Length: 332
Image (cartoon, rainbow, N blue to C red; front, side, top):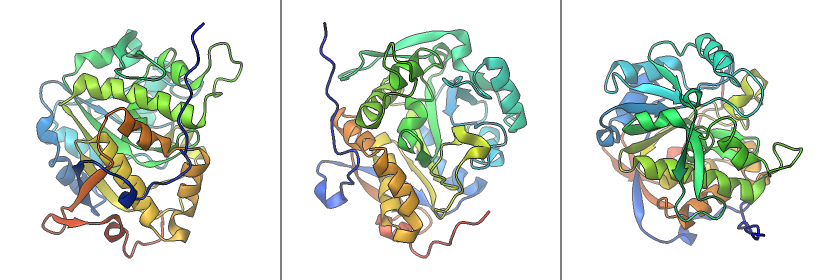
């Protein structure tokens, strides 16, 4: 009988930049939360994309209030990424996206009708290798992902009920795993009556290993964009039931390094004032979500140090504290 791995620890503890070591990656930043801002910052990383391009984003439950605005994405698919396809998978839970038929109806309700949307596990599953994993040697993903040469990971950065926060790694770690096998591998101990019984550090590690299978498959033709807007502590999978947003909007980040971009978003949240970040920080720490970052580093997925480039101001280097100066309280 194989011995169950022991997960890491300290997923509830934030590691400040001065306590980190290693090389630095580049992360771009703009305060321009608009279709133009998304297009402008995406251009800083999209040169690595070629061939048949997929865009992985969370299309949301019906009428979800916090997903990335459809007109913003349409500007990309009508412009620089003309011909790209949005890719999604069905959900593990029974809801508006549990079956392909229901998922298609939800896509129509939410307005994802301006470019092709490929529900990639409708065609079955494929096993993609996980190199150096603690929990897996492969992950079961939507088979249709294999049709694409490049991937833009376009993420709405926010909280998450189980993961603490949802950044680029959660977007592909959960979002590319197929709805029945892959997501079960991440969420559920085989034989358990509780489909959500895996939590805290073990859950984060399983999710990051899934994300690694996707990053490794596409590298170097993969880029990441995180939109820090409408940051509820709830994931977009909660739709209209999501908790009210109380964290101020910030801007959009882009990078070729999945760890650096998620780390930068977390650092920006921690750089906010206490009343601005209290709820989101509590969600990250109570779920031990910061283990996502430390485990990505252990897996060699990127750097947790970075140079933050302000593209609004002649590409000057800034600190996370500069990105959150004079934030306005969230309002609809």
